[in-house]
Image 1 (cartoon, rainbow, N blue to C red):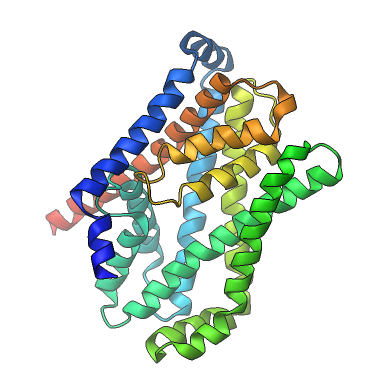
Image 2 (cartoon, helix red, strand yellow; image 1 turned 180 degrees about the vertical axis):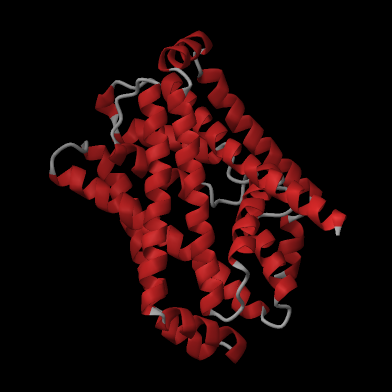
Amino acid sequence: METNSRILRSPLVTALKYAVSLALLAVLASQVDGPGLRKAVSDAGILPFVVAILLAAAAYPLCAIRWWWLLRTTHCPLPFRRAHAVVWIGQFYNAFLPGGIGGDATRLAYAFRDHPDRRAAATTATAADRLIGFAVLLLMATGGLLVHAFSGRLPSNGLAVVGALSLGVILVGAGFTALPWLASKLPAPWARPLRQIRGDIRGTLLTTALSAGVWILDFASGWVLARALGLSLGPVEVGSALAVAYTSALLPISLGGHGVREGALVLTLLWIAPDAGLAANDLSAFALLFLATSLACSAIGGLVLLAGRRSSTRR
């Protein structure tokens, strides 16, 4: 396990991830019609793009509350304000320094610093935070596409995406069902936080609702961008394509999922909305602008990190 982790962090692997991300983003950029994109942005004005950034940014406080609650449930709490700052900082590292420290690793580092004797609980809470968000993402995307399918608005080739998302829902559901069995096999420091999270019914409802809010804001941000560019895409198509894109970004072959996420977004939209008359160059522009929106939000984490360092220096 330690050897595998060392390999994944090696300079060669990091360089290969840089190469994959840059190559995929370069392919997408080469598809973009520059003059056409400039005209679309000029016609739309700056307001839709500001709204898209604000919608995306509004999701991060919800993520912070979800993580803060799970830490609290497992008895390794962080102050409410500190949890929010750590989530922003983690997003900054994940987006801009993915070769070094990822977002989840950043969260764990701060949680371990405050609770060095409760590392298992902090790790369990952070893993649960990720899994709950992922499960809700799959459920929302699958449900939206199924509604489209029953209404006859989803093309037949879109059913393959429904099948893939449904498989993900089944696997995640099986994982949650297996939690009691897993807890019975783990040492007490790991089993206890699992039972605490599973037994917190109110917390389950809260974290599920927060996760739904996160994805609704994220999907809305993407839909506003699509509308600003004049793309004939509905919220369900945008949300489902983003679900596939975020899932693809989990593959450890690029830096922070950059390039893989955007490529998957373009391919999924071409697959599930072939009748929308969308060209690859328009969708490539949309994917790259969505990436820019995400990076703009992540940059806020850099400001939070800088402010924290200045504050500690003054002390």
